[in-house]
Image 1 (cartoon, helix red, strand yellow):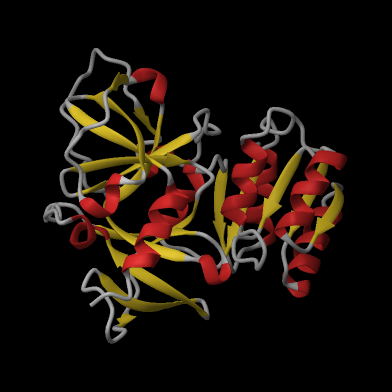
Image 2: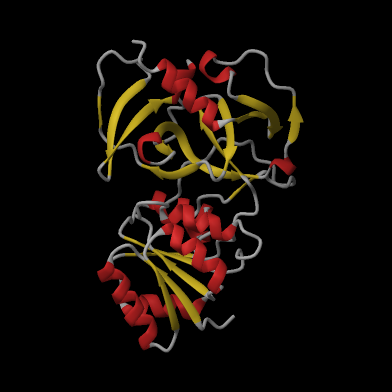
Length: 179
Length: 120
């Protein structure tokens, strides 16, 4: 059995994990329906939460074609089964360092012309907010992210930022043309 | 739970017919849908015992349909089996996270489909 990369949580065997749906192939046949409305993903040191129905699919990063006169964090356009999808390097957009130990994946949001792919560190996972502790929203946030954070919580020593996906994609779309 | 009625969802007429014949030939009652939206509607109105669900579809993909089924209180008990040409490990994991009970990669054999239905 191939083991996927760990997600970086401190081991807390006694605690009820907030993150469920651990990507272990051995659990595929017994997968339970998701009981939670949130998923989470990481971008470098940032942990982000989003409604589970906001994302469409996760892929290995496809080749991209650079688009001139756009922000450096807009990696370019990818052809996803015939659909042109803008690919955002989230680490570059948020000004953080990518987690070099984690594999990069493309998380797809939106449909058709509204589709956007975001490069993230490791696979997204289900997240149970009831097992996390609410925290005040951090005051210092990356510029491109700040307007999209609608809450925060903590689990296993990591702060998770609850993001409004539509606002985040809108902010990215507004800033993308600026090289 | 013994599966009697199966909803087969695929936007490929060939694959749909193939799955329909496999299931009907084994004695299952088969209903069909050719899009994600139609699948969500038919799950709610027909309440099948299981869903065989293609992934790559134009309106809602199979992952989104699966999430719609498994997050709806009225339908979340209905097992969903994803049947797709997308065979990457990420697809299996993502499908699992959307609540799919199993994942069968195309091309499949009739026995793979029937074995999975019997296992639900």
